[in-house]
Length: 295
Ligand SMILES: O=P(O)(O)O[C@@H]1C[C@H](O)[C@@H](CO)O1
Image 1 (cartoon, rainbow, N blue to C red):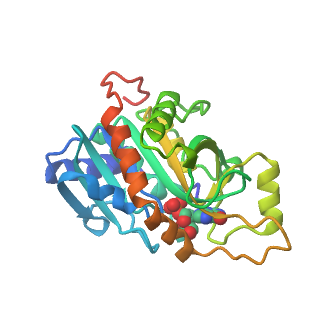
Image 2: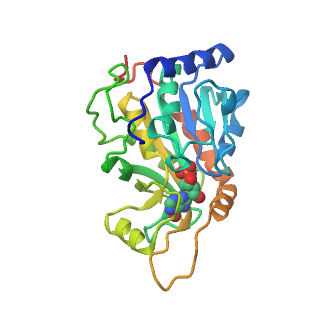
């Protein structure tokens, strides 16, 4: 069911055209905010914001901690668009719908996508409140054929068989680590591998052990499909996971993860994340000739 739905180029274009008719902002950078991380949008100046329910073609957010607003504005000399709330497979959206905004961003002229998420840690060295710079991902839905790129390829966006190696931009990862040092939060930051699972249930202990053995550092229920779509159409990608909980890996451990706890850690780290992302956007180079698959 998830892989069958197709969205035509015209439908993406209609949404992009509508947005361009409603705001004068022409964003270079897009940010997708994870659970409890929507406050990143508050840093934007000269805001124009739209409820998802008012944007033609846009899906709706149904998850607590995802406000459902698209915010345009200026940040340190760059024009940005920020999703306060994303779409997940477990809400019943097809993967094409969960990733719909990514192609709309492309049509708006965005060249860099920043994805953030809340994630559970499997690595011994990653603790709640830590920030993981995503260096790579395991797209579990994609590995079993649930991929937003399934179906006829839209050559106007990108090639039939896009490479995914190096999909998290190395220079932005290095820049983020430098900024963390300067901001005195380097001890909270490390690089790692994120895995996307379907959710909405959190992992069993056997699943947690499996993920750990596979080399996954943090697990969540989003992001990888968005990054596949972004890489397909030539967007540069940077990703951050806020570690909100340890994934229980022991039968002796009576801890139980819950969504409220996930949101609480988001609130706790909101300022740190805001400062980090603001400085990253301020210092990132915008290259209008960036290699681009999309016509
Ligand atoms: O949108 P993200 O990936 O940040 O949301 C994570 C995964 C689930 O949606 C939720 C679980 O608490 O947080």
